Length: 139
Image (cartoon, rainbow, N blue to C red):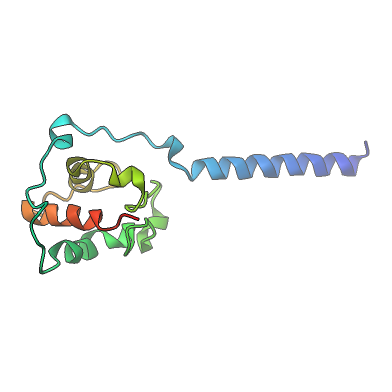
C-alpha cells in the first residue's frame, strides 16, 4: 500500500471516530437520570381538571421556560445551544408518560443546569398551570 492510500484510510478512520463521538455526546447517554423522590412522583395535581381561562400556564411558560425549552417545548429555545444538557421535547412520549408530580419536580426543583424556580414562581396554583400547559404539548 502506498503512503497516500494509508494516509487516506487513517484520515477516514479519524473522521469516523470523531463523528461517532460527536453524535454520542449529543445524546443523553451520558446524562445522569433524574432521581425524583417518591413524594413528588405521587404528588397530585391540584389544578388538573380546573380551567386556566386566562392562560396563566402558557404566559408563565413564555416568561420562565421558553428561552431554553422553546415556544412549542421542543428544546430549541434561544438559550438551549448554550447548555451542556440535552433538552428533551415535552411532546415526546418519554416526557408525557411521566406523572404530573415528576414533571413538577423537574420543572420547579430542578438540578444542574435546570434552575430551581420555587422562589420565582411561588404560587402552587401557577406551578400546576405550567405543568398542565406542558401536557398540552403532546404529539
